[in-house]
Amino acid sequence: MPTIYDNLSDDFFINMNLNTEMALPSQRDTILNFFERVQKTFPSMRNFYSRESGDFILEEDKDQPQHRWLSIESRRICSGCMNPTSIEAAMQQHSLVLQLVPYMLSVSPLDCEALDFLFGFDFNYRGNHDEIIAEVLGGGPAIDSLKEIPDMQVLNFEPAITIALEGSCRRQARLVVETRTNAYQVRRGDFPEESISVYFTVRQYGSLQTESSYEETLHELRENSEELLQEHIIERVIRPLHEAISIR
Image (cartoon, rainbow, N blue to C red; front, side):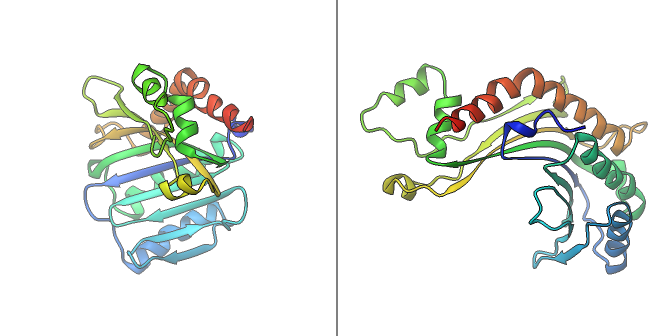
């Protein structure tokens, strides 16, 4: 079924990142065998290449509104779905990757530095990104006072907050807003249409418990993410930003 987030932003994505303590394998056969196994499940992921940094990428055609991608860096595995048809469609990909990494890339649950589950929202906007973010999310006496300064123009406003979800602080949630306006554009009053990005990540730090797996932990992070989005993020951040941009 379609996600409930489809109409709240121009683009919507669900990503998984696994950060490891030890360097990941980079041998030719190991990398190709891993990507070929993923491709068996998702045949349209046929574009494979490497970067000068040594990263390896397998992806669908990026010119399509909906596309999947997967990358292996020196100490990080990233799996992403842009505009997925459903949350389950994204979870199918991320779960497969986490099922395979212990066996095909020798990534033990002991080797986990952090596991992330991320919801992302992109809003296309031709204007001062920081100004509209300050209007929508910048409530409070301190910020409101600065807005009253004559000839004031906002040049940077990218709120971010990280919270612990339990006493050990090993499970955390982070909300970040990323803008792409610079002082030169503000000075000229000439703004290209670029994306304002909102990232909401729930992260598990440290080695997994002996009775747990990467896939099980990912499903826990997904549950945490959806609950927090519904209770705190959608109606207070995502929808107000969507509405503010739509009336400009």
